[in-house]
Image 1: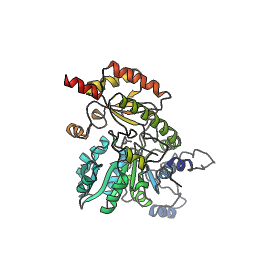
Image 2: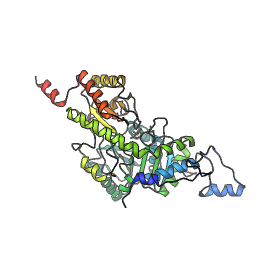
Image 3: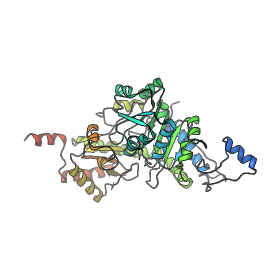
Image 4: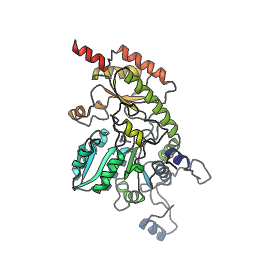
Length: 410
Ligand SMILES: *Cc1c(COP(=O)(O)O)cnc(C)c1O
């Protein structure tokens, strides 16, 4: 039987304390013991069903973690207070002073800043490479490399990582492959493609309602046990614990993720095709012209489409800025960062979520100042949405690549 992440989530049944279908939220930071002897025992080795203190584990967080492990086809998971907490604790678990990371150069701005600015203070150095150039990845690996870090579908340019090839390289060189799967939950299953650790910002599609910040790490039992170890685990000792009330609400939203992803993807594919037909530069892995279209078709789980994010270049910064202001006025969506919300969100990556990346570096990556990133919403009538966007493109005089060439030549 083929692996289907939504079926895995569906088969995750919880029988709560009172037979409640949504398990009671554990509203406690601490837990009682019948005796000091028992307390000591639980502090010494983890005992299934016993809890010490909610920074370590909380029953509600365990439920959500177990569901996420199922979704990713992993042995175990741990939820965290943010996506950045998931990424930073994972990297601190895997790397010590003197170690190196090889990372994709087009990654989320916060991840870039962590690798480029903060981790060097602790003696952890990162080499940034183009992950689609396997030779470059290989060349960047050294004796000191511990981790290859990439995003399954990268932010904001939507490059798709060849996870099986990177996993092969990682195994060969004895390093761990860590994949941020925030852009493509359900669509890609990195652990099943050979990755060692998957991280998510659950703030985005997994939760889907833009009402909280949360993250998770999915990996082996061994890795999650080390991550949360009382004596030296980064999640335990840095303390980015997810509140149990949030964990409960995210668990409910997780059960509608497959329905939402299908609609996000269908709407995004529709808009991406329309932008392309107008002759604009568009990045979307569902379009046959995307450089990794065939790769994603080979790697993806069927039935969830190609994801809800589209990046379009409308030429220059003033055009992008005017267009976004008008789109908000005309109710296409919100001018806001983040993604995976039920309404469309749009933002200029160069001036927001990727602003941590130096300007010349952004140019080299092909992240122009006219780039707009859309997180396409669950619009009931996407044709109508396109009609509005098309009218605004006309009114704002956004020209196609072809027209620009003609204009430039006269
Ligand atoms: C938002 C995001 C993060 C950071 O997640 P937070 O929940 O904001 O901490 C990491 N990676 C990607 C790809 C993201 O989009």
